[in-house]
Length: 441
Ligand SMILES: Cc1cc2nc3c(=O)[nH]c(=O)nc-3n(C[C@H](O)[C@H](O)[C@H](O)COP(=O)(O)OP(=O)(O)OC[C@H]3O[C@@H](n4cnc5c(N)ncnc54)[C@H](O)[C@@H]3O)c2cc1C
Image (cartoon, rainbow, N blue to C red; front, side, top):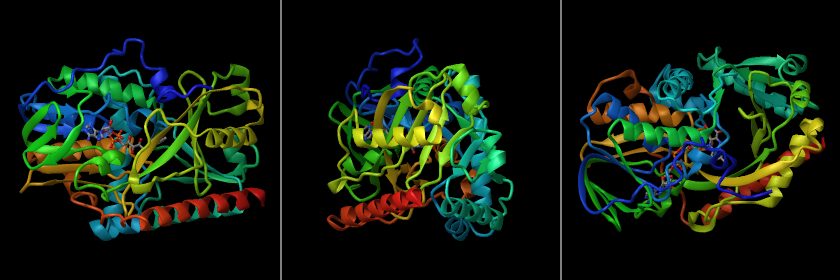
């Protein structure tokens, strides 16, 4: 087993230029400076340039486009958000939660349409997602989720499946039932991120890699290579935000790890199912999420949530062999036919968790500072909606997007250390213990 940045980076389009884009070469002026070339930064640049090709848009990336969570995630393009629906309803008023989720349903299609339009070969397949339950506790959790959605006018979001109906989609051991949503697509995240960076350049945007921004201030993004002066500066740094001056407690970086199997032969796939490349999730508290990749592997992650003292993100590539082994064991428990299938890749990444679990997107017109993020483990689709929302905020275009309940939202800051580490570590340890007890039952 090797530990590259991720399996996805190891399987980029052969045509993907494996060279770093040049760093910023001194001071320059722009209309919009975007810090971070993950999905949030790149979608924002993409939609701004589509709206107004004359805008001077400069993206500043410390490493390479797609280096962060955007290049390493599970490739679940789904409408879920960690934010409780009730909180969205409180923020947006009656219908606010449904408006948000329905926008994310549309977003799943939008991502596929852009990939198609821009010729991004990211293996997009809208086969839906299946959340399965292997215990009464998990089944109860799924029922509660369904009821919660129905209560908020989202009866169309999920349908409850019996064990037999689940078996019609995937033959997994020990399953008692599940929830299915059609609003979900599997994709290759690094190919999407890299393809977007190229699309941004094609539209006239500039992407500087190897350019760390030290400070974001009204009207400028300051780097060791020079300063970009711009009317609007967008912070799109998600889990890495605490490394920016003044943002130490804005968001909490939490780790997450994945494995990928070797390609699985057709006969074994016939026994497993997932014929439409449906995404699948094991509904533990520290859940496991998987996809059948376009090249016939299983990419499978979750089951852990490490956090670090003072929110210091460890260097990449990231690995946690004990988590990889836990992931392999659960995968084989669900799919015994995979017993002899090798695991070729193991990697980790960091997701950004806001204190109130609610992502936000906004622009302070007084300072010209804009932000988007706090998606927790659900940023693939949400970052696209955030990019379109930032486009409308920055270009001053009124739209329905601007009335969604996450617009203008900023979470309160996390507690200082040692409280922060202790509290989060305790919660995640309890979750792991809970899952173990549940599995033994
Ligand atoms: C293992 C894992 C699995 C996940 N699975 C899913 C999933 O299946 N579905 C889903 O919806 N979500 C998933 N997520 C979450 C999702 O990947 C993120 O929410 C999303 O990619 C965030 O995109 P972003 O552009 O905001 O952040 P990132 O992709 O992290 O991009 C931030 C970028 O900013 C750069 N940067 C940071 N600081 C600076 C600086 N000072 N100067 C310049 N550049 C800087 C970083 O190098 C990075 O490239 C997962 C996350 C992880 C880690």
